[in-house]
View 1 (spheres, rainbow, N blue to C red):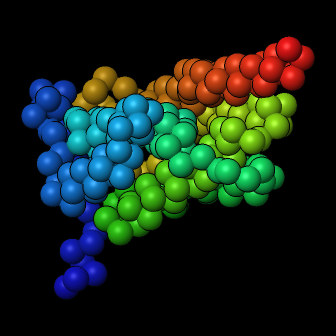
View 2 (view 1 turned 120 degrees about the vertical axis):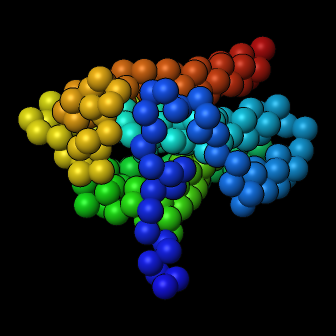
Length: 237
């Protein structure tokens, strides 16, 4: 009976457009988790913004919308790995220089692995697997960004991996955009209620990965570049 209770779509069934603004997720464990995280980041502005981004992902109607549309799920994932993760990484930066490539490989493998159709459909239809997906995506991305944004990281290497992080996501987005058929069984019907075909919804999600997802990578890359410029200016002064 307990195993049967774990099957279902987190945030409920796919909403229709007329229902979406009533679909806020006030799940007590999630509210408690976000409250605890807000206390943990203290007065860090970056950390509090990161918590707010997670609230958008898990509390706002985006959570329910991502049960209907693959493109909304892509926005959800981009918020996790390219917005909340680097903001939280800035709260707890690495204090010793470490190679970035292990965290890059792990975070890339998890992002691609969870977008394999069988894994994706399982995660979206099973509560426990869903939270494994969310925790692994966010956790691996935080480890990646901690290495990239570390004050002791070499700026050139940090910029290289920030660019690589976006490139691997963009490549995945391109593959999804040009896939000839819809890949995800869980999004075969609900997009029709939103005026999308399943393939059109998938293509939109791929385009979001391919282009707009680069904006946060550029922004955090600019932070790294600015830090490197200041360090260089300090050495030459």
